[in-house]
Image (tube, rainbow, N blue to C red; front, side, top):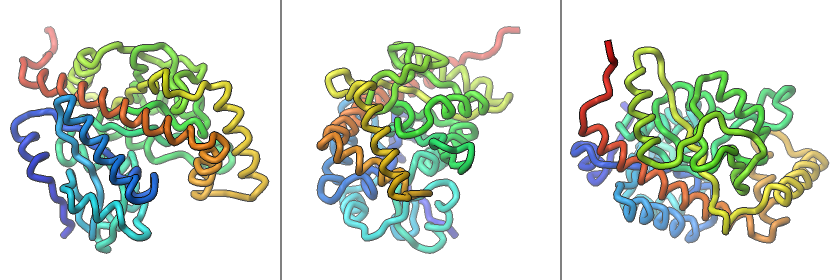
Length: 314
């Protein structure tokens, strides 16, 4: 039998109908080295608490799926040797085999929904990779957004992807894509991608209201909601500059023969080198910014659920 544990803090918040925000754990297992990874995780959790919600970092440790980590568990995860990177396809495998791993967007959505957590903060979602028309390399994140009713707050799709095709796939799957406070779909390190977001909302209360309305339509089929929150202006790397960096990194990867799952980590490391560390600083800033917005949305959504449901007029 698989083991799933919800931390006492998260369980109490959910029982009481209070705001909870899910967090992925690949930022701990694969984002940066120890102890910086642990410090980053603690900082993001602190931001969520400061904004009125309870953080629920999700990970698999020794085969147990945890929704919410205590200090000891976070320390163990941060120092894990060769942890897996878990998505929908291998989450149950890691649990059945007693392994340890960090959850991606897709796996975090699965666990959050299983636990009853409605809002999830991350950095950027995966999407359609460049050259997918030949490789068919499309992130499981998009399929998860199509099927799992969790609101994901991100800074857009990772800019190393084919962002136009990513938006097209999201549209095909009926995933609402909401730009927060602007019309342009953000591009992770940059506030603008040059692509219009399908929808726009300007405050957490409006987003929470949209979530509630969408859940009223659950009988017609439902999935996730994507909230694209631009990185703060003071922390962004402008698109014109960032696009040149990405093109250089992509060309170097092709020349070096980098393929498959090795492409993304290789590109991110090369971009970090080219930008002399600026990309990591921006990445940290946008994760913190997303955590702040996600907590505010979760607070509004939890408050709205205590009120009379929307219902249909007849």
